[in-house]
Length: 77
Image 1 (cartoon, one colour):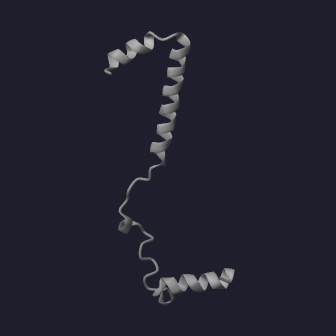
Image 2: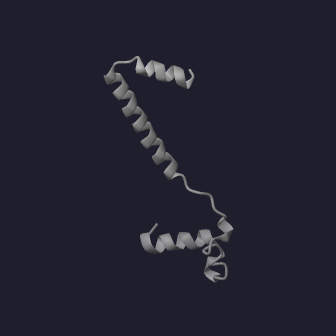
Image 3: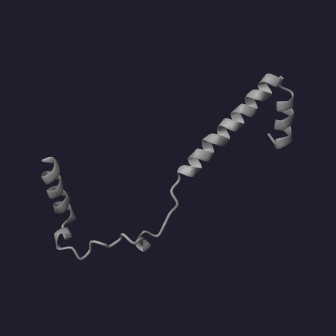
């Protein structure tokens, strides 16, 4: 259907049905506005200040061991 046909079809409906279409369009607009706002913009991760901030730490050479030790120390796992 082209836009003019859709408008003709809507105008041929009872006023209550036209109101329901209006409400549904408002619902869809709100729903997809929220979905768009949730998307995270892509960034150049290497340009972030935190990247590489621990590269000189001796205790961080084996990150898996460091995390494992941290978990065991704090949570006994």
